[in-house]
Amino acid sequence: MSADDLDVARAAWVSQDEAAHAKEAEPGRVEGLIRFLWRNQHTSPFEHGQFTFVVTTPLFVAREFMRHRTFSFNEISGRYTVLPDRYYVPPAGRPLRQEGKVGAYRFEEGTAEQVAMVRETITESTARPHAAYQRMLDAGIAKEVARDVLPVNVMTSFWATVNPRNLMHFLNLRSAPDALFEIRAVAEQMEHHFAQHMPVTHRVWRESNTA
Ligand SMILES: Cc1cc2nc3c(=O)[nH]c(=O)nc-3n(C[C@H](O)[C@H](O)[C@H](O)COP(=O)(O)OP(=O)(O)OC[C@H]3O[C@@H](n4cnc5c(N)ncnc54)[C@H](O)[C@@H]3O)c2cc1C
Image (cartoon, rainbow, N blue to C red):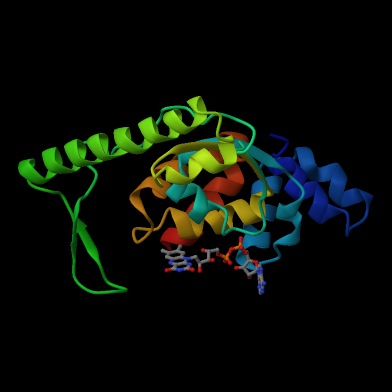
């Protein structure tokens, strides 16, 4: 990661004279400026830092993630690598029932029977395609062909690099209550790193979301 709050302020101060820079050590100056910039949506100073995340998710989450065109990505290749025997099974507490209508769904916990059914069905139905994948590899079939049988809950890994401004845009969309449970879990961890590296920007952004 190369991102911090002071860089945001320094990028903004480039447009001013030396006296503005000299005041950067004054308590509250950086936070005051960041608040001003964000309030007025003067967002370009938030574009100079860089976050690189190493993300491991099921394929269906990676598909949503990669809709975000402002990130740079590099992903494990199913053409060059034998994909590991790792599949996502929804954890306890993952809402299972979809109520309401398109655009206004509510997701509710499943019954004990539904929880057991989901775990058993997904675990069992991912074992079969993986065995078929392995059989084809053992028979000398190319990895890029054998992988065609793998389901969307197969795990994948990728690097995702983004600047702070676009990270905040991603988090606005993917931490929202209507976002997919699994991508929200990823967004939560990304936000944790964001808050560690840019505590002031994170706080200002968070407050503007809850205002
Ligand atoms: C809850 C939720 C449900 C969704 N459901 C679906 C769905 O059912 N089907 C589906 O296909 N997608 C769906 N999406 C994906 C969504 O449509 C966006 O593709 C995705 O969220 C990326 O958003 P973005 O374009 O703002 O982000 P980015 O690609 O990161 O772009 C950031 C910003 O850059 C600007 N920008 C980038 N490229 C362009 C461009 N070509 N033209 C103009 N401006 C541009 C825009 O201002 C954009 O907001 C869903 C997303 C969410 C969060």
